[in-house]
Image 1 (tube, rainbow, N blue to C red):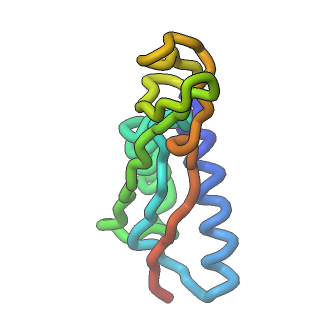
Image 2 (cartoon, helix red, strand yellow):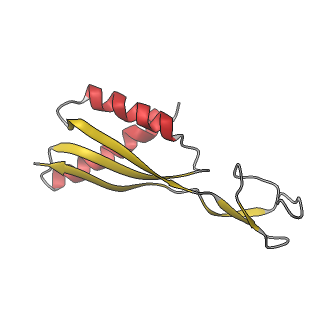
Amino acid sequence: MHEMALMGDILNVIHEDAGKKGISKIQKVELIVGDVSNALPDALHMAFEIFKEQNKVFFEDSAALVIHREEAKAECVVCGKEYIPDQKLAFCPVCRMPSGKIISGETFQILSYEGRQ
């Protein structure tokens, strides 16, 4: 489950930034996770809860992870049809060519975090 490593990296970035801003307790973390970003929201929630339990000094008891889903969209470079792919390499529903260019849904980023001193 690579989501544990992803969440660890996210929390390291937040911890470093929060330290610079004098924030000692995290209350909320918001992420944008694309449908074809290779990160599973349920696994990210589970990883967040594990890290929160292991580091009670850094997290409020009620700290929450909020994930904003980014829908996947692709455009066929052959016929120009825009469609929703079910994976990064998907067949165009019109011309059946595996020539889709992903135009959204790959994002995986920290949107924001909230905390207190």
